[in-house]
Amino acid sequence: MIGKLFIIGLGPGDAAMLTPQAAVALALASDLVGYGPYVDRAPQKPGQIRHVSDNREELDRARHALEMAAAGRVVAVLSAGDAGVFGMASAVFEAIDKGEPAWRELEVEVVAGVSAMFAAAAQVGAFLGHDFCAISLSDNLKPWALVLRRLRAAAEAGFAMALYNPHSRARPWQLNAAFELLREVLPPETPVVFATAVSRVDEQIEIVTLAAADSLRADMRTLVMIGTAATRRIERPGRSPWVYTPRFAGDAA
Ligand code: SAH
Image (cartoon, rainbow, N blue to C red):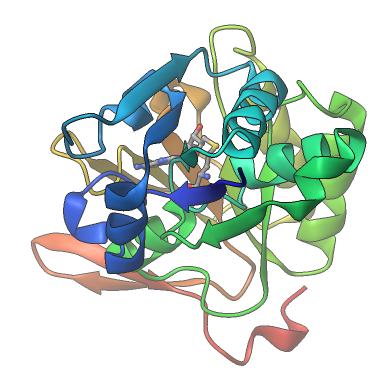
């Protein structure tokens, strides 16, 4: 019996940002697999089995999902945002790459989602409006020295940046170290956005300068965006500014 594996991006939180394609895949699944808070976002469906695990057990979770699909179940592996952006999609393909030959016969469908960076950039205007990159500040899977090297290279090359996983209790100092490094390369007035719990009821968006950026504004649910020398604020009386990176940012670095 051959089942099916969906890998689904749920979007940043608001149900309106779950794509119709993701909703169909969730409804088809016999089994949901994922970190508890993500599985909680799926609408209840009678008979559907929920397999909840800790956020750090990604490879084990991927293997468990593949085993169930190989046994004929219709399994949905869930990620926040887009599953391919620091989410479960790579973990599943790593497991297939190193795992049972039979797993290559499975039907696997990756369902794209709205990543936090797109929801956050849209809330302030067009922050990522020209060339940009996404960097995870987590050093669980790569050395911190490599994170710093990539940050410097991206700033020197004039990329706007979306920084995922900027803060956790186990990593309280990394974000301020990142700001220190970026202040060596970028002008002090470069716009920085702290976008927390975007699209959720407790959403909080703060726009500051690189000179004033402080990691105290960030927690695990924050996406931090760093502008380029060309990123601009449009001030509005009594309202928060729009921030955008113009399309002609090519010579800004
Ligand atoms: N696959 C997800 C990212 C998972 S990594 C995506 O595409 O969005 C987890 C990190 O994503 C968090 O530490 C935070 O930096 C970011 N994130 C996820 N949801 C968010 C939200 N609603 N608002 C702000 N940041 C969010």
